[in-house]
Image 1 (cartoon, rainbow, N blue to C red):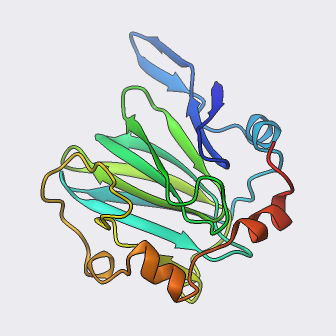
Image 2: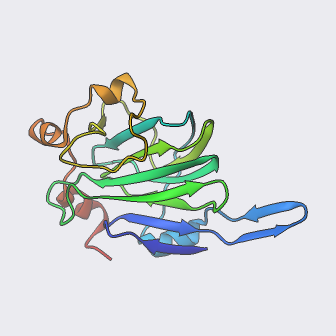
Amino acid sequence: MKIEPLPIEGAWEITPELRGDPRGVFAEWYRFDRMAEAVGHPLRLAQANLSTSARGVVRGIHFAQIPPGQAKYVTCVRGALIDFIVDLRVGSPTFGRWESVRLDDTSRQAVYIAEGLGHGFCSLADDTTIAYLCSEVYNPAREFAVHPLDPDLAIAWPEGSPTLSDRDVAAPSLAEAREQGLLPTYADYQRLFGPAR
């Protein structure tokens, strides 16, 4: 298993070693000890989710206020998607920047998204299914969204006219979310986890 940091602090790309033979393929897609060593603290597992989407569906950009926030460990178990991680932490050196990683059922890669980061994805195939492990249970009072098509974010979604949920259509822009005091802060993130590793 290879664990590599992405250019946004708190975001990691995980590439498992695939072991195949005529029976199929085996992949160790999550390791508590290896992730804790790389990230600097253990991922508390409080909830696990599955999401299935048609081609062209965009979900996100979703985030939870910190503390406690919600870290996510995401992989694709069927189909393919482009996963987007957005730095929504006010005061972060990479505030407003995004990174993307292709996740699919061939490479079996995963991403780790720390508390305070935004998360979204675009499905590249019908019935694309992702699994994600979460550090906290869903708390609607502390969970919000930023509009995925916000021109200030300028996310390069792979589909021309993505399908969005009503929630995501109604989500504020990054600037509006900041003005409303909804965004997490880099200072709160550092209070939870200390200085960058």
